[in-house]
Length: 325
Image (cartoon, rainbow, N blue to C red; front, side):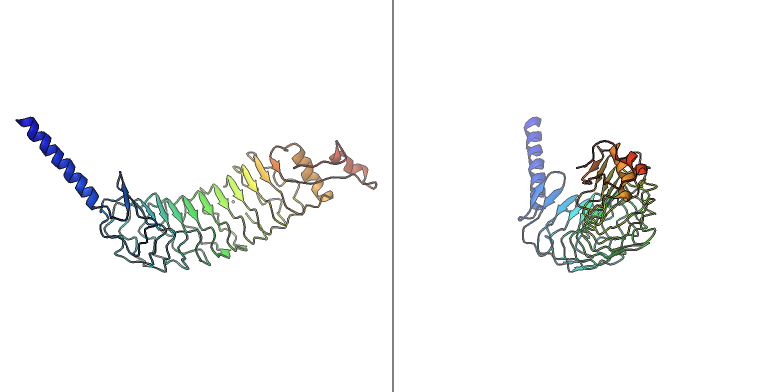
């Protein structure tokens, strides 16, 4: 007699649990195990009321959300990942995420038509590790990063930022990857990156940078800018650098020992620059001849003219024309 009763109770309990899970899943969304809810591309204009308070991962991307208030995520205290990208968020209340201190893995606010961010918007997210603010309309670096001491990855790609101030990023002590690609940056104040002691990847490609004064990096993207000259000490303390992208700038020459003190350098991209293959480049060319595997895209032909002096000839060993491609 006990077994049928236990079996019936077990089935009822399982059925009840299933009903609870189903009841907590909005009809227009898809719910997966481990408290994951996908409500992306469902035409939402407000947060569905049926979302379970135990939800850990919530995808609200590509909807019609416009306003986020202090009550929007008030009951979702277990969230660790939140996708809001692709909404038209014209207003974000400073207390929007005040109840979401467990938000650790990701907050995606990209493609949201955001013009500015209140300084207190992220003040209750000390454990957040990844923040995506790409493809918005911000003209300056938000002053909202003060409490993001755990942030390791930040994307501000595709905004309209023109300058990086000395204190713009000073509080991001754990930051490893910073993407500033495709902005309008032309000013980087001295010391802008000096407090980012863990920074390993910096992408400054597709900006309007004309002067370079650098930083503890492994990957440095400076392609598609307007850099016309680099001092011989610009990379002096980048002892861990192994990837350098300088393609599509206005460089005509490089200092002879620019890369000589970079022991871990493995890849250098130099294509699409207006190189002037004259005496200024001879010493640098000599260095590249012993590191040809690292250099990509340096199309420089050294022709021995009739008036070349004997003192210059040792740098032009081998064939009369040398091209690195």
